[in-house]
Image: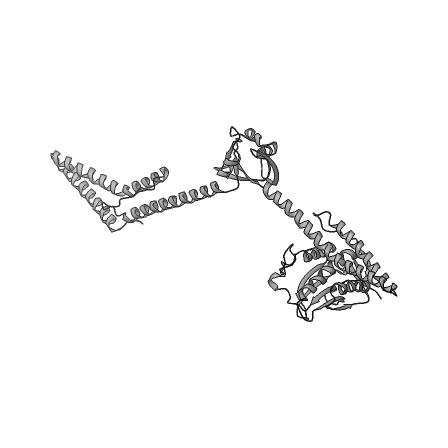
Amino acid sequence: MGSDRRFIWGLAGWVVALAVALVALTLAIGVGRMGAVTLLTGLGVIGALIGLVRHVERTNVMLARFVEALRHGDFAMRFDARGGSGFAALGDALSAAMRDLQSERVRITEEVRFWEAMIDDLPVPLLTIDARSRVERVNKAARQLFDRHDGADVAAFGVYGDALRACLSRPAASAPEIVPLHLAGGTQRAIVRIGVVARLGHPVRVLAIQPVQGALDAAEVGTQTDLVRVLTHEILNSLTPVTSLAGTTAMLLAEATPDIAEARLAVMTLARRAEGMRRFIDSYRMVARLPEPRQRSFAAAPFAAELERLFRVEWTGHRLDVAVDPSLVIVADPDLLAQMMINLLRNAAQATQALSEPQVRLRMRDDPVDGPMIAVEDNGPGVPAAARRDVFLPFFTTRASGTGIGLNIARQIAVAHGWRIEIGDSDLGGAAMRLFLTRSFAVRTG
């Protein structure tokens, strides 16, 4: 931008013309008795002065037209730089700016139309409330949901329930909440979220209203079904070895010379497991909370021996190796821990039952690095690394006949005790489920 050669030469020409006209006018006045010549030279001076001013003022005129066009939003304005003014670069630049502004306006208009269409087709009903408490149904979902009122004020929406009217009357944003809506098809619950945005310099409240009655009903039914599956799974897990022990006890007592000591041991194990099952079921009556451990200290060795007996009754074809630190004392809820260990041992047995020589190992020791630890290992196919985080999710399973419940229950019991449970690889070739007890939950004696 700026002046070019044509402008300079044009400016010089007008200056020279003005100077010549002034000189001629001066000479005519000095000579006298030359009225006509004086008049002509005077007109020449005026003409040269006007031409010089117009030549210089053309830039200002172009800029004034540019600003005026901006003020009125006329982005179709173009600037003609012809006529020798020398400001072709300025005219081209102003015209290019107008083209850019026009293109930007088209882009913004298309973007606004896109978002308007997006919001209008949004499946979540949206309402806005301005400073005058006027309520606007923003999209089609809102117009379809709220179609029974007359008027655009907050009071008109009272036909849908006092809870919604209270939300509409709130002056600021608030946390999401579930409110009942009185609609044509009956009362439904909906999640209401309230936010505040600025519109033309004024705050506007925005309500997103999402009916969730159908989802809540489905979730309630699903929760009830899941609860039945969980309890059925856990009861059957404990009932299988109990049933086997009961049958073994009956056989022992039916012999000509009953082994009273072995039968007494089996009956005592049956009694403990029955009591453990009762307490376990009581712990899961409240679905919304984890089981609350009733902790006490007990020796690890006899606890592991009982687990071993239960395992051998159900899985007669498996090899079970038990390695327990005889001085280890555990502080925990023995019934919940037994429930967890039964699940872990059962999973290990199921993972290896297709092998010709299935092997399971139970270890309880005080690791010098990790602290007190309980591990269940097997020589099965193991758990893929990509699935190790998911196996603790409810109903996630890698077996076609699995329920995906046992490991979730095990994790809940571990969390309730403040422990950590994880899956790794075993030197037996399969998976290793390791339960790390904090120091405060396990001590050594001697």
